[in-house]
Amino acid sequence: MSAHYSRRQALAMGLGSIGSLAAFNMAGCDTSSSLTPHPSVKLQMIFWGETTRDTRTRQAIEVFEKSHPTITITSQLSNFESYWTKLDTMTTSNGLPDLVQMDMRYISDYVSRGLLLDLTPFISHQTINLTDFDPLLLTNSKVNNTVYGIPMGGNYHCFFYNQSLIKQAGVGTLPQSMTW
Image (cartoon, rainbow, N blue to C red; front, side, top):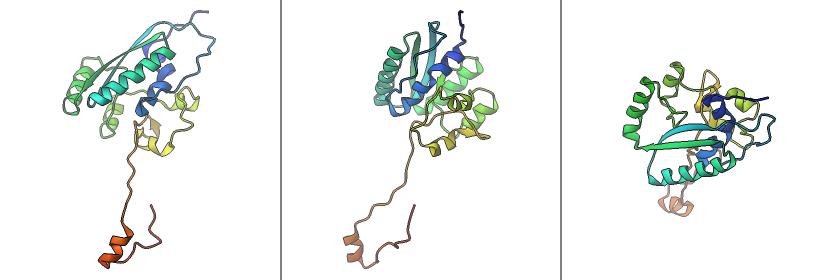
């Protein structure tokens, strides 16, 4: 039996690994399938950042492509300021890349225009394996309780202080009940 996949379906098959671009180290997908061999698929990716992110992302893509030899990913880097104009231009010309870096401020807009893939079924069936991923990080990737992205990381607030200097200043110590 011969299986044919659209670009979006092939994207879904490999998205578990691409989701790990966040940490810049690729997670392997289960390569055993009754549907192999998979047809050759070319995916496009656009993201913003500096040269360090570009280098690490391209390294991660190489690792992914070695694990999935029928999938090729071309990527395009922009700076943050021009990224959104470029992405909007691609969107209006029906040329939205398969993989996009999305700032959470814009995710609702892109979802409302039907431009992002619902990842929930792929996560539920572990095509995208997030078993070791902090579920709290997915919160900002949801619109109407549906997951549309996998965060590249998280920001955690912390508070450091020097107890000796606090005592010297005479302001006392932080209350024992102070928690995060």
